[in-house]
Structures are given as C-alpha cells and as structure tokens.
Amino acid sequence: MKILRMLGRSIRDAFKSVFRNFSLSLASISCITITLIIVAISIIASYNVSNFTEEIEKDLTIVVFVENDATEEQIETIKERLKDISNINQKEIKYESKKQIKEEMQKESDIFNAVMADWDEKDNPLKDTFQIKVNKAEEISKTAKQIEKIEKVSLVRYGEGMVDKLIAAFESIKKVTYGAVLALILVTIFLIINTIKLTIYSRKREISIMRLVGASNFTIKTPFIVEGMFLGLLGSIIPILIVIFGYPALYDKMNGYVFTPLVNLIHPNPFIYTVSLMIAIIGIIVGMIGSSSAVRKYLKV
Image 1 (cartoon, rainbow, N blue to C red):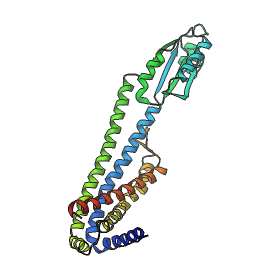
Image 2 (cartoon, rainbow, N blue to C red):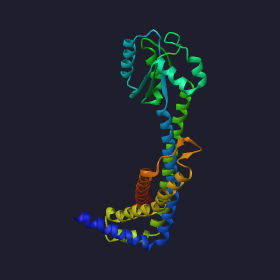
Image 3 (cartoon, rainbow, N blue to C red):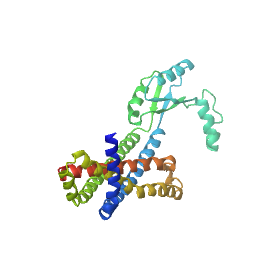
Image 4 (cartoon, rainbow, N blue to C red):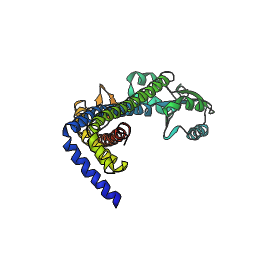
C-alpha cells in the first residue's frame, strides 16, 4: 500500500511539474514529436519494403520438368519426394501434364493453336511439370539442388542467377531499413536525454531540498521518470495522428501501390493502429529512459 501511495503521489507531482515548468516541458515534447515523426515515417517505409519483398518472394516458383518416359507411378513418387523436402510449401505443389500445358498454350494464342493442333500424344515435345513454391526464398537454390537428385526429374528451373541476386538485394534492403529505424530510435533517445537533462538541471534546487529533508533516491527519481513517460506520451500524439490520418490518405491517393501495381502498399487497417501503438510505446519508453538517465548520471541522485 505504501508503494501504491508513493506511486500515486509521484504521478500527481509529475503532472503538476509538467505544467509548472511548461516552457521546458514544451521543448521536450517538441523534441520528442519531431523525432517520433521521423521514426514513424521510417517504420512505415520499412514495413512496406519488407511486405513488398515478402510478396515477391512468395511468388518465386520452381518449375520441375519430368522425363518423358516417366510412368504415372514414377510421377506420383516424384510428388511424394517433393513433399519430403522441408522447404517446399506442401499446399503449393501443382502438377501439369504435357497435354494440359498444350491445351492452355492453345487457348492463349492462335499461333500456338495452329502449330499444336495436329500434335498427338507421341508428337507432343513438351514435358510434364511440377510448379512449386518454397517457404524460405533464401534457400531456393539449395532446394532446387535437392529436387535435381530425384529420379526421373530431367530439369529444374527457377530463374537462377537473377533470382539469387534479387533475394540478396531484398535481404540488404531489409537490413538497411531496420538499421535506419534502430538508428533513429537511438538518436531520439540521445536528443530526449539532453533535452530532459536541461529540464531537470533547472530544478536542481528542488531536488537538493528533497535530499535535505531525507527523501530517498527512489522518491526523488520516480516523479521525474513518470514525468518523462508523460512527456513521451504527449510527444507521440502528433506522430500518431499523422499516421492515423496521413497514411490512409496517402494509400488512397496512390491507389494502394507505388508506381506499379506490383509494388503494393500495406492496407491501412489494422496497420496504422499497430504503428500508432509502437510510436506510443517508443515515446513512453524513450521518455522514461531519458529522465532516468538524466537524473542518475547528471544529478548524481
């Protein structure tokens, strides 16, 4: 109960302090707001880049060509062997016979139809195929090599070379965007610590009096930590509003994609609320860390 009373008093004192030192509090809130806006933009960008790369990776397809003399039993065996490979998506194994491929090609083009019209089963030079998708795009090359070892598989293709470079580029982009967000958060912490340090330094006399009357370190520090959390929450309001109203407006204006329908943006719901929650949490935690660090390191409480 004593701790709860002390915590309640700390919250009350923190609220009073924000308004009593309004100009310095406003400076802290402004600093938090500006940096959190940049962080919010970076988070939105990184999530969309990650989403785009994942969508592209999901569409990567391995085409497995079966030898023409393979029997139905051998084709079924190939299918079972494919299911045994852990990186292959079990729900994305599609088999097409050379007869089906021929019929589809005839429907797609009058030229193909004219050329293939007289082909019978023996004349058809096409091959039966399996079209499969993988769970982890970065392991597609390893998976293709495993498939090549299966009996009666004549050829495996997935756009090797270009796809491997594309996956490597995607991984680099993800790392850069995540690194940028982390760097911005660290910069935010640094700026807020220095801003809040000025606020606390201006109240050094107040802290000295509290120490003279015998207040414990916990009693002195807690109101400042709560105040930092409150400042962080206030500083996150404008970035959250920008995310909630700005991102859907951007999404609608760009029709849900960037430059081309292949590069889709993440749908606003529930994405904007997830980002808003992240911004609020970052603001609160950073405010708390800033206040705690300033009190502990610079005032030697």
